[in-house]
Image (cartoon, rainbow, N blue to C red; front, side, top):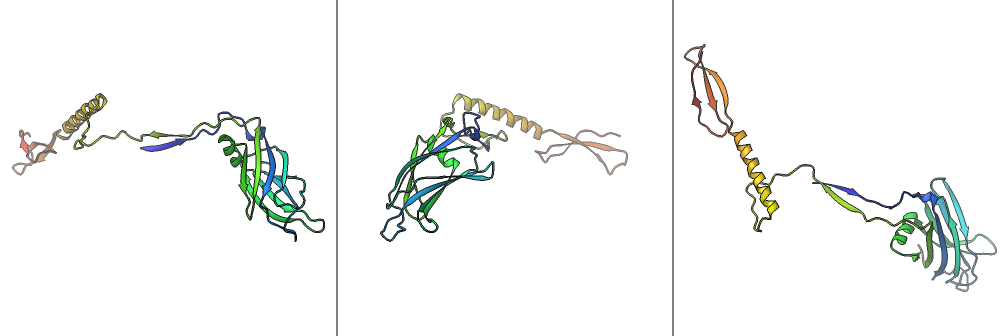
Length: 230
């Protein structure tokens, strides 16, 4: 048997590009400390790489002063969605002088949001790469269609003929009896084909003009002389 797998992902032909993804950056916890006082001034930048356009849209939260557990609750609307899109959430420490320091980050794909929605989730904590976690909320507009369950269909490449020596300890069902009868008929047909005789004309040593038709059988070793002919 060959196995053919068919997976239905969506119950609709709606394209991702026709939908919008709204992401809420809710809060973070246990962030690394970047300042001397053991705190940070964190903010998050969401980088949406749009695969079908080859560009990146960026969104930024406000800065929360002197904390390792900031609360933002800011929502951003992401458009032009594609299957190969990536979503980077980078948490920085804000500095008045100099470049902002990267504290931690996480990268997610569009499939991550889909799977969570299909599992009935609209919020989720994600672990950041170095330390801490980020709490996200998300939903699609219009709503993401329900995912149909995947299934595996077995497609036989040929009809197997069970061996005549196979035995079964269970009582055969009516369908099995029919199969056994069909197998017996097939075996009888095979035996008839196997025992078909072939006629071979052999030139004898008695005379070059005399030929003996010999009937031979593949299943027997006896050779029978039927008649002589010129």
